[in-house]
Length: 323
Image (cartoon, rainbow, N blue to C red):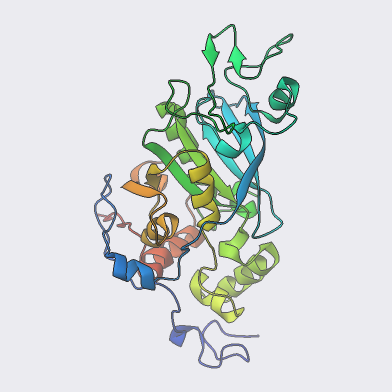
């Protein structure tokens, strides 16, 4: 049986000497909304982040009543990078996708209502997608069929946003190894209270390595590796995710200035990209609930997970002092 710190065929130096192939550490800052870190354009151009947005198109949108109270509008996206369907979970009926609402050749009003390109609410007997006679709301389009966003019926202000990567174990299987499910729920709660917000839900499980490899990484963690070391031992990057699709989706939703719910400073720059197609005007920390209350996740695994994020990946969190 392997000792947690012994050399192995995959890792001849043992866990303790594992190099970190990941962003440089960033000092922690107070747990209040902060202006994002500023870097020069020259420095930004050197980073491995996108300079050209991928193609995305919203193919369907539907109203979802929720058990929490506020309604959401679920947007499903196709793209030209992978074959996965990515999502935008939108709080606010008046946040509109340019690609979904654009008038298409041969479009009927029934077609538009069916794919979700309507204003206001659907109701039995409604026949016009662009005009809600009960609410008195009407959409306007230019000569090219593009939605006119300078309109009271379309929201484009600074908005709460979260870029959330799929986590089957944390969101569905009640895992106490990570705080992904907790962060997802907290983001939804904050956006529901605010009335507007957008969670871009990217299908990149396990920091981009997939569910099968993620489960292998869990086994390596039980043998003594941290989350970074486990990914590297499986010959994956510490964090293999890309956020260019999230940027493109936010641009499609006309949300180009956002208040980003994140502890990850690298995500801020990655979402903005080299050309700053989206501007992060404020960073809002996602502080673990267990640090401030009797709620939240409590396990030795979550403590190690959060410590690695702070100490090895430079996440902007400060552990509370226990007296």
